[in-house]
Length: 269
Image (tube, rainbow, N blue to C red):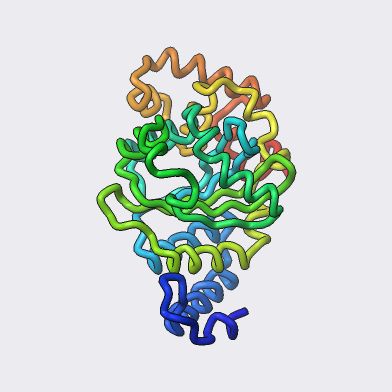
């Protein structure tokens, strides 16, 4: 594969230079020998990609329900480059009802091919209609503009989802940058298969949108006070939501909830 990449191609936007190939090999080598846990390895890989393609922020999430035409449900378990306010607005974008039709084309292609796909923002959805969507409005509020989406199916429902972002006034990503991201993300299949809850979050879609938002904030390590400020709700209301999330997953503490999603049921496996 790497020899093929090094072969001189026409100087199109998507062509890779020898320096790109060297960068890819170097980063893959550093990731493979990393002794961190799955979340640490994922962070190391995507932060390296962001440095190569000059991206501002990223997420690596689990799509618990990612089917064409249906409302996707995501758990944002690892991310970087965001402050709390920007990340909160990104979560609102991910949970907006318009995500069903703005992601339909990409999810459809992934399911049809049954393979890892990586696409630029302009390849995911028609720009003229995207800008009128609620998803676009929340992304703009989060100061997110160009993005690369990279999806790998895990099973018939779950999807490993990596999103790489630039700020809204930055130039679009190029085909070359998308190709670099795709090669790096698709050459480590074991990273997509592991580091998730044992049941792939199968019951998460049964939660209401508000409870899913609270779940994501809890998985981000937020305190009750921080969630109340973020959602403009009272701490009492947040406590009620928090208890409902705990009941749903059969846990009694924030720490046990985190272990359930990061290490399996209760963290005992």
